[in-house]
Image (cartoon, rainbow over all chains, first blue to last red; front, side):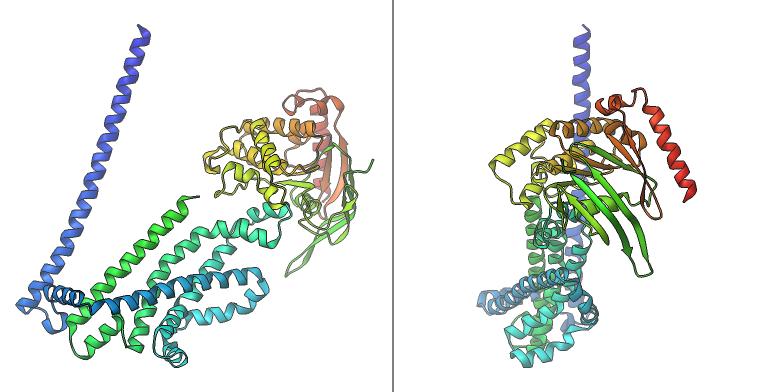
Length: 278
Length: 258
């Protein structure tokens, strides 16, 4: 008797918990749906207002163009194929600048971690170089490497490398010294300390600097293309500006926004994959 | 027989920008095979400094340290070191943490791996080999740290307040486990602690240090009946509280003098 009563109690408790959980999930889902709905209507409203504003003469059509014209332009360029080389070169430059910037920055961080003396020596130089507007070096790079791919990648590197070095080096230094003490007590060499403790402990930081570097690389590449101006999305913007075709400028901006977001998401996905194995 | 640890005139000074301060001065000490020695004393008496010197993590400014007759020039696998907290690596599994020392000393093979698994099982960690450290309680984590230290089979174990961060009940259990494990392996051990009753319960002799600068004040030998009882019961043995008060009084006097 008592046993059945108890198991009945147990079952009803189970039921109650499940119902609570179901309600909770429903509320959460509703909230998520609301966010998505408001988010997309905001975007839609923006385009509608833009379109209406330009057609009704509230904003200068020549300067701001309007969405249907811009999408027609993008579609036309996609179909005619004239967009792809520009897109390809810009994405290529960004990818190379991003990967090289991260690798070089991390490598530099490893070197100065290795030698505290070198770190002390280089510290003021890095601070100066980091606070300097690197874009100002653009003309020098163009003369050094010729107006093209290399100069643009180097401009990008000048923006990404030092900040990567500073962030990664900082994360190396903030690893709990007791973790180092643990491996040192086993007689670990400096190489072992680095690969068994420092690197795995700051892996998360290294990966998250990747995300910052995506944005930085885009800045470097677009500015580089502004300066060199032969091809690429940055070139399209400058060209559109020079011939006063702001539809071209706006469509390039939209494409940049889309591709940069895609690249960022790719890095976020990579981060998840890399960190999930731990 | 050769003492496991020999300190000869060990003096160490910490050098800072403002001054050089003397941490320990002219320490002489022998620890015999299988002994369990506790270092107690007020904070700043150089307990941890002394341990770091014996571990080879710190080179003394003066004097010599020998472990098994060999001068200590750096950390060696002969000497195990256990810290206040477990400091398990969060990115490694429990087994991964336990074999860390074997990996670093290049002695990881099928046999040593098996021995480590066996050790984990002895410590009541069976079935936890592949979970991550964050899923274990504080006491379990410290047991993993103990396995990590013992896996390389050190003849000398240095314990730097390894129980101080634990709940009282867990601490008593772990004291029993450590002292039982060390006794069965015949491992020599040096324990740094600020818990006087813990020092008496687990060790064969208690060394009282005084500060400014760190020096040995007095060495107390723990009577056989307390020594041979497991730490939890040692506290109930006759003579325990007398010894406790004796050391306590000496500490008080030392505190007034310095």
